[in-house]
Image 1 (cartoon, protein in one colour):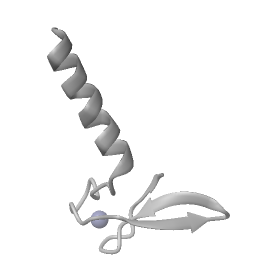
Image 2 (cartoon, rainbow, N blue to C red; image 1 turned 120 degrees about the horizontal axis):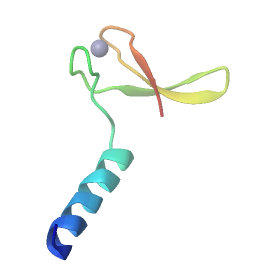
Image 3 (cartoon, rainbow, N blue to C red; image 1 turned 60 degrees about the vertical axis):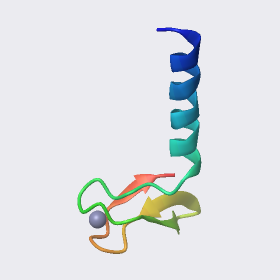
Image 4 (cartoon, helix red, strand yellow; image 1 turned 90 degrees about the vertical axis):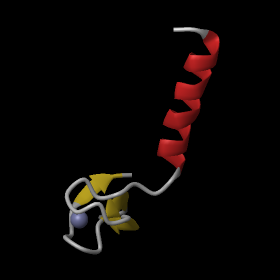
Amino acid sequence: MDDLERHRRLRLERDALLSTPNCPTCLQQMEPAEIDGVPVWRCPECGAERPA
Ligand SMILES: [Zn+2]
């Protein structure tokens, strides 16, 4: 893997961390929520949750 490719992947990973994820089940954009004070992403469509 050359430098350009490595940088491109790093940028994609960082963007994925910063941007709102999509629900793995129904692909809706997830919403930030909190459960017992712990930040999570929640799907407004099916209620799926994942760690923020
Ligand atoms: Zn969903």
